Length: 212
Length: 212
DNA sequence: TCCTTAAGTTAACGCGCGTAAGTTTAGGGA
DNA sequence: TCCCTAAACTTACGCGCGTTAACTTAAGGA
Image 1 (spheres, rainbow over the protein chains, first blue to last red):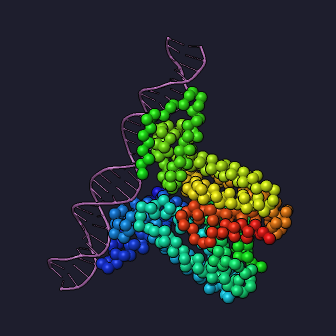
Image 2: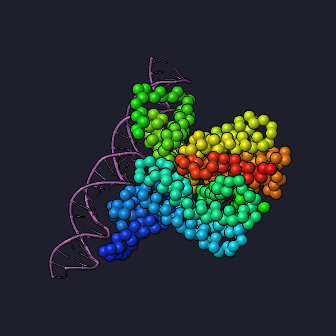
């Protein structure tokens, strides 16, 4: 599959103060490449440039190097995930149990809807590359903070409401809950046909949140 | 880092009937490359050849292409994992609870000891490449069978012994337990510095096995 | 209108990759 | 002893990659 970028219009050059627009287009192009089913290695600098309809060197005006593009993608998608979770939480009403399932299922749905993105977000694109770049471990850890905090809050609400058994370490249990969700989400994002019963997600949530 | 393969001996050519020996050496070379800290993309055909001390084209006598090498690596490591788990189980004695923790911790220890291997085993090297190769989904699913069956058996023993609450779906709970272990193992294999309390592994096991 | 400068382009570099075709080395049966 | 052939080597091709340097276009205020 060549995707044949036969744009008749070569691309409208941005206006004077709007050079920054291209930055967003580059990130979008990288995400589009992922969504087409490629893995991380198919998101090359040149492929992104082709997708965005620009020449490869034009990227260097907006990103220092190729890994920086990937980091921007991860940033964007983690922010999008946090928004999705927050929306699901607000739509769930005030019952803590409902909120918990809403948030957890929204998480799993996001991963299912965008498996390639999920793999990039949590698949360790960095471990190998971050050594050479200016990306620090602290950078990476802070990325998912917003989404995780929401999950921990909702779990706390379940304990307060009495829906879940009290915990000796709420933070630890929240981490464990997320790890379970992540295990399922990641495996689904990887194998195409996941073995096990359909309700395995609910099983994970109920067990890890210590629901009554 | 160049690793400078300055072998004085260019490499002893194998005897007549022993051409198959090189196959094992190639797999070992690929694993060695992983252990040096590279990601999947640094296990190139030529890098493997350099590591094994042979010329790149010599690999084609034993593997159809580069993905086939990776599949062989995954096979080897999954077999090794199954052996490790089995040994841990046998060393744990007859108490079901002890056996469960022994097997689960052996799993986590394996991932911690060989993070790069673990990432390859479960990181979705295939999803992108398997389309072009002769590797089927059924192939991949059957790979981890031996290890998973052991885990499910031990979990069943816990229920029988009364250490764990009875389950309405033992298989489903075993899958959920594995997913939790996998989430932790994978995340540790990816981020270098994993947040959360040190006993998060025990939390996962206790909750997902429904221990009393 | 012209000129400055932001927003791109084209050209070229060196590298490592997978693969093809032909060549050498040495074990072991006749 | 000779020579066949398995096992591995050498050389070479073309490609896509990331990156750099130098050049071109056009927006928009003076």
